[in-house]
Length: 267
Image 1: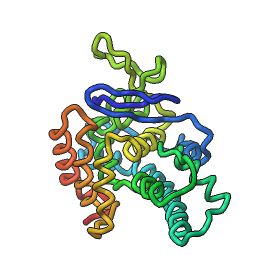
Image 2 (image 1 turned 180 degrees about the horizontal axis):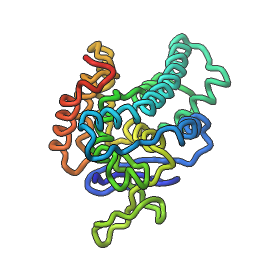
Image 3 (image 1 turned 180 degrees about the vertical axis):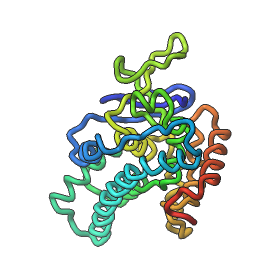
Image 4 (image 1 turned 135 degrees about the vertical axis):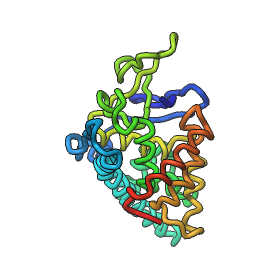
């Protein structure tokens, strides 16, 4: 299990070379809606041992896929708002009051608070963070971290990405937690909550700045950011997601390749 980072209304320094992760219990309507909308509808069913391996894989991917699509749609909507602002600023015009409020809200949500007025520099920072993730990457990490949905943390805590938390009672205590450690494995109300937490982690955590830099080059290289090709390239930016480092990245790349038949978006 990776050493990862979640805190409720706090910034938590994670161990083992990891950086920071934010989960805010805020009043942000967009963030609440995306989790609440599928709190009861996204639930992974663990298939019996006698079921064909490929059938198990397909069931796992298909169950989580709608949650990934929902997150990417939310992000696409947010990104379109930012792109509209970018055009207004580029032309030297003033943003509307609604746009200013949206900018302030999104800046807070993505850990890039707006200090004064909206600038091109701030918008570039935001557009690097507010961007989609390929389903092949998200689903592969979910499978890897949750043992295809069979781990204790996936079953009891809806935690499919190995997120940790550091507030007592925030999650499940690992059975083999090292003496002196205080972390717990975060509990989510649904699988969707875990997916949302993963997206926000990767898109705003400074530990994954390299992933976002890789993604920023896709437009110039004419690479579809939702494709398996993009997923494979982005794994290089996840070297800090696990203490296993490069070995972890290679495992993800192999899983993306071996499960090519299950991706709805093929190269």
